[in-house]
Image (cartoon, rainbow, N blue to C red; front, side):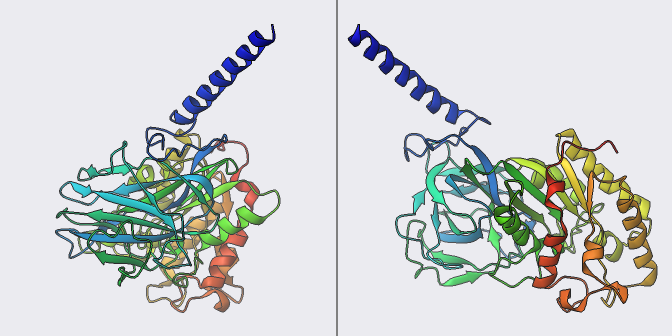
Length: 432
């Protein structure tokens, strides 16, 4: 009887262990086809889910990179919004014109902020479908297999890729506000940063980092322009408004357990794609919504900070109803996925070289419709948070970076503080 009981218990243990392993390997329920099974034995033992911790939108083909970075290692430095016990990355060849071969890719924690040296014991070799090399067709993206790595909250990661052959134009994000690095030859596995002597202000190929987390429930994706991109924030300091928002979500009592994904593109507009004369403006928000927001891992809520460039960049949009209709279409795309959308009022730009009183009237008319509550599920009033009470068409001096359009670090913090965190997780999309 005792032996039979022990045998039965052992069988149950085996079955439960198998179920856990298989459950972690399922798409959505756990580690998907990029699961770190054989090579890294990386499948986290605890329950959890994948959630995006960092993202950047691919914007354009980097000028002067017709043959890519042949026989060179690119070490991107990125900052997590939340941590976890495993990680995987997303690489993009969106703007390439031929297949991109990555024969060696690694992930590690940085030994110090903005430093190309890896912390001891954290270097992980990445695979793609259990193969070390991956070929990404032109116009496509790929997600790596997962690796076991204890990723802290608010930490710098090093993602290094090596391309052995010419690969065509590099898909990049130009306004990273973060120094990354390049080295000659295959240095992807090197923990020392000494070979990475070339500095770069761009993120190349890398568009996302996901973590396996038992703590974080989902992600907030922020669709925005240069203000969300943080173009005037202090370099290397992670002081974009989305960074301050991530800090609030990590530290404030009762805050939703969400990560923050930045989908800001400088110069971006709601309605119009960047032209061939200004390719760094990227495709319109309407066109890139699926790629940069809806396809990101674990998104539960979308924040939209868009519309000002439609007013001030040629060809200028002078009809507020067209801008509002574009914003409503963005909301419609999110609602079709069951996502909640928080929308921001358009911020002041008095004193900027593009300021005209009639254009500011368009901004005010857009803001009136946003505040009426008929565009978004909820509203964050960035205009009220940043404007000078004595001159409401202008930014408050303490929040002005100096160009009278983009906030300073203090202004970015004020934006994050203006958002009522409870709005991020109220039940379901509104009936607009």
